[in-house]
Image (cartoon, rainbow, N blue to C red; front, side):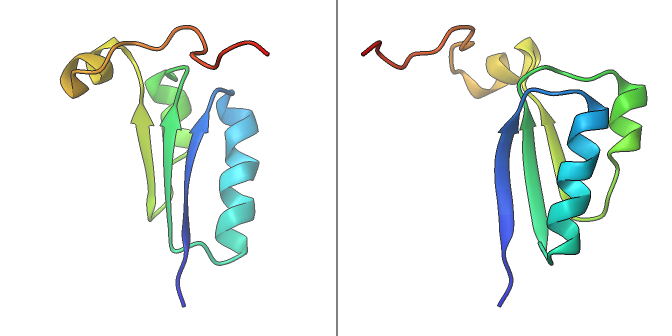
Length: 78
């Protein structure tokens, strides 16, 4: 059996790296991480692992998807 993760993360590379390493050590075959706060290229280089996809959710990403940029939560208040 293989498994993977899909995550939306807003954190620094220093915080994301242990998250990736933890899940890979548990046997994740694939990880796809959507970065809510885009990281500089130098930081992305620190997160280069086989089978880990990093998607920068910057304005170019939102334009390409045709979806509106979600700057504020759309969850209704209780």
